[in-house]
Image 1 (cartoon, rainbow, N blue to C red):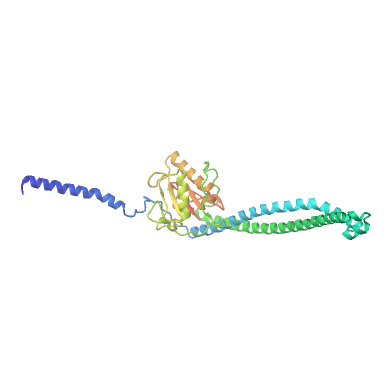
Image 2: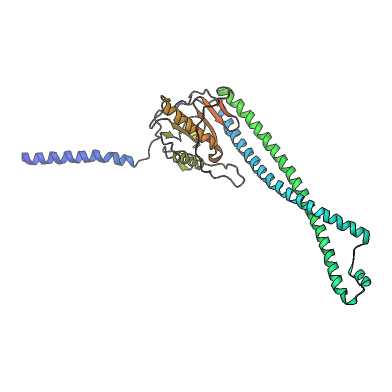
Length: 338
């Protein structure tokens, strides 16, 4: 082999090797992405806390849905009652007057009109007119009866709704008490006050059941942040948070650890564009404040179970409480879903 031939072959082999190396990254890009949660926050599970919050959160949300629906129904019943009572007020004087006159003179019939008629030619005309008057009065009487029945029915339905609301309120109080006892394990019951101050945009409503409750969902949606799965409701919340402008690093599904991450019902919203690190300046702290504010103020629209941020935990039944778990959550906002 000539020297020129050997140089040409060496150059060709070098080019092939370089091309092979260049192709490897694009081939790897087609493989499933590993969970991109570098230095994911460590969380040590407090015994039963996750189960208690999940259970009480669902019961609280169910009771609140019942309470809200009952209050709306009561408003409709109140309107029906007011309409019936107004109609009763209009009809009662008319019926009373008719009854009084009938008692004094007796109900005028067509036969009585014929016997008392002085002009036979006007008998039919007079009898027809009198019968129409009697029918009108009888119609007013029936309307009064119907209006009184409607009023009684509305009052009974309102009483039933009041009982429903009391039961729902009792359930809400019970869930609040249970949640506070559980939260006492991670820092006590001191109110935080004033930490979340941002004005938040409105989130779009996540799908609910026909009765207003939150249906159970399985982990069957592809997690945009990992190779795992999340629930449809979690995906909706993720998209809403992104839509309103919170676009820094986030990790949702994790195969291990406590609480809702392995169930596809939680996301950790970092303060930075990659990885997790505690807030080191005002911008990062305000980012966390604003994000937590958005989740809290849109909890009903998104189906939020609880939010943890900067040594505090927000639960719908209790509001903000202090939190002292293994992770103080000064490096991310934790979002758990119903």
